[in-house]
Length: 236
Image: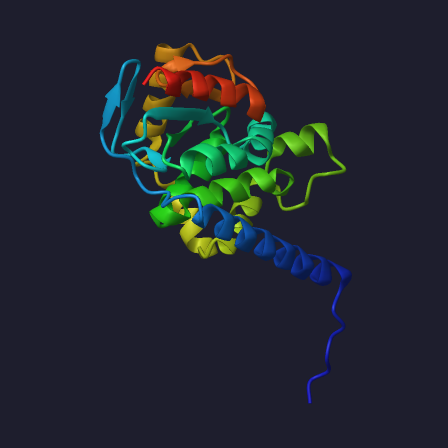
């Protein structure tokens, strides 16, 4: 019989990491699955904003208020907004049909484009769970962590980190590579960012646009965003 080999600490670490990520992904998918379908938006618009069929959105397209978020998966402030503000906005406004939420990529670096390509390769209802997974696991793939927080960085790097998260989302490594290398989305990704910058004078991420009115770029706490949304709703 062939001699068995002892399991190395590195192998144990990798297996534990995959298990933790799988659990995190499952929780995120369940949570976001209760919030909306995560499908493409219907084309349309209102004063100060335009919706396109390629937008990724949550909620009722006929909601009285439209909230557009311009964000980047590598942005730590966006991750903060995603974990601390957005869940309660979903519960109180998106799920109740008061707000239609649209997420748009505003890339800060090429890595954001690669992450977006994987997200859009997944079925539409897996888009938001994957974006959430990216935000919650930035140390697994975001180069910013290896530059500014070496102790928090993992050894796989940007490419392998994205492939790992793609695997958690159900995508093979070959498929993730194929998606990242596909240039078909490059022009639309750049166009969305260019249009957002020109229309809303975006200076950073996240930038929240409520019914066509852009708020100052940066983190917005729930109570502050609630007041903005309530004001917009009161005008309807």
